[in-house]
Length: 536
Image 1: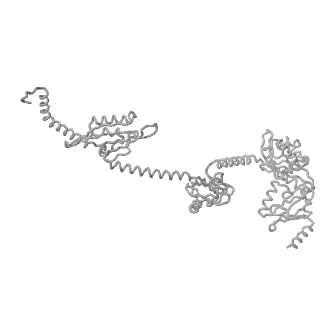
Image 2 (image 1 turned 90 degrees about the vertical axis):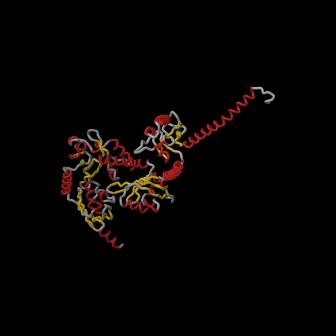
Image 3 (image 1 turned 45 degrees about the horizontal axis):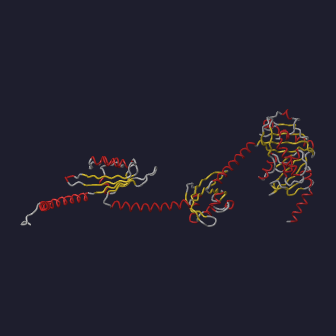
């Protein structure tokens, strides 16, 4: 193999005409002396063929052809370069042009380019950098008519003066030598600095992409060819996109939820909140799988959602980098970026909320149990109980209350509307009861009570009741719906016992009154009269 390489080198350097081997990116692998001598001395040390023939729109096309493995030919003012693909390299040969052919080729090439309808400015100068050709695109871009610039201006008059001076100072400091504007441009373009600010005739500015191509005759520079593309719209678009990206980044960093960008589960980016939630630097999350941050029992479901492009929110148990777990709520969303479908997952730590929900559920169950117990007690009680809201709407009635206050059909739900319809009650009792209820509802009284009786059919004894109503909050506050408790106690038996007691007392009093009257008369007689000794 080594002998083969030496033989190849010897053969290459033995050829009388210029030959070189280059890679598809333009890198020169080997070149003989006749090849290098075709270029000016300041270009012979360069390692890339496109740097030697100068970057321009033409050489960009040649680069594209090499990437595709296609042969190409390129003519400079003094030489013609042929390139033929050979495996993974290109063989370049250089053919010197006769003097008359050189002038013709140069003239024809530049004339053809100057008259093309390309959307760019093409400017040609002489060796002293005075403009001698100014195409239609240059007129449209800079606003100058050809007669205003030909042999009157240099291309540097079209640059924005402040930036031009600043860049000249910068490259002089970098190279540690004084540079003319032409030398400064060469240095800048060699370093890929192609975006420059230009000034139009009307003093407005734009950003252009610059290419500069020297024109040779017999290895001597006789002028320069400038290409300028207006890239202001592209710069503005890039700036807008950058602004949007910064805005979205700022938004993503400001939210308290973790935001993950991933493609098919592979994390592409994460915000600061993700660092806090998962306890790992965001840059360390990039490249890892999203399911690594999901508890093992939930990973299959998460993968299913990703593969089936499901975008509905769901809850899942997450896994931090330190192995601890947390409850999360995930809001997935698919977006298209540069032709790729990406998935954005917004993750919220709901561990605290879930704890509160479980605590509230326990409290709710305890309250429900207490309510059931209270209702059981109220249902089993002999009294009629009615619970209402502060506006009189009935919340609860036990069995005895329904028997006492129920109405056929659909009864009004409010106590103040139900009472006037209780036809089993006497009119005077209904009126008084309604007044009592109104006192409660308007806040004039906190407690009310009254006694009433209900006539019974078939001349049976009346039923006697006592109503007691009170607010369920001793201090009624504005905005607090405390409600009221109505208790209807059946006191019929008490009334009967009172009647029996009264009858007993009356009878006993009558029976005792007769003998006592006799005794009283005798006592009075004995006290008021003197008796004879015989009667004594």
